[in-house]
Image 1 (tube, rainbow, N blue to C red):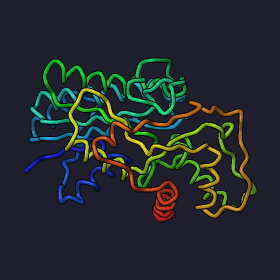
Image 2 (cartoon, rainbow, N blue to C red):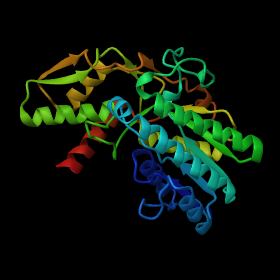
Image 3 (cartoon, rainbow, N blue to C red):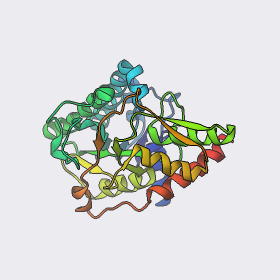
Length: 305
C-alpha cells in the first residue's frame, strides 16, 4: 500500500488532488493546521516522523490575486518560503520516494515570449504586482532541483496556469480574477445593480485551467515524469479579461453593463503557457472554460446561498 500525503488539502488545488486520488480508491493523508503548523520546521519534522509517507503532493501555499499580493508582500514571501522549505526538507529526510511541488505561471518574466516555455525562467524581470509570491515559488523550484542534484531526491516541479473551480476563494480582497468576477456579477444580479466594475483596461489576456484538470495532470505526472526540469500545465489557449467578464456575465445571467476601471492595475499583459512538454507525456485537459465556469458558479450558489 502506498501512503500519499497531500499538503494543503483544504485549498483549491489540494482538495482537487484529494478528489482525484479518491476516484482511484486512494485516501490521502492530510494534516489540519491544528495538527501541524507547516511554517514550523520542528512540527513538520515530527509529523513526517510519525507518519510513513511514500509520495507527497506539495499544494500548500499562501495565494491571492493582485490586491492581496500588493497588500501583504511580506506574508506572501515569508509563509511560502517557510512552508515549501519545511516540507521538502522533511520529506527528503524521512525517506519519501517522490515529491511533486506546485509552482505557478507567475515565475516567468513579465514580458516573456508567448506562449511561455519552461526555459524562459529567470530570463527577465518579474511582474511587480506578484513578485514576492513568484520569488518564493522560484526558490521552491531551485530547492527541488538542489535536493535532486545533491541527494538524488525525486522531486518534480509543476507550473500550473491560472486555476479556478469548486473550492475557490471568492473573497474580493484576496481572490483571483475569475472567482472575483463570478461573485461581482452574482451580487450585482441579486441587487439589481446597473453595472459591474472590472479592474484595468480589460485587454490583458489570461489562460485558465479547471482545477480538476490540474489534479488529473498532477497524478499523471507523479506516475510518469521524473526530471529536474520544470513542466507547464495549462489549457493552451487564452482569453482577454473583458471577454472573460462577458462570458461570466452570460453564465450568471446578469443583464447590466460592464464598466472597466483603468485606474486599477492590469498586471502582466499576457500569460499563455506552452504545454508541449506536458502533451508529449500523454496528457491533455478536458474541461472547457464555459463548462468549468458553469460548474464553478453552481458550486458558488450552493455554498454561499
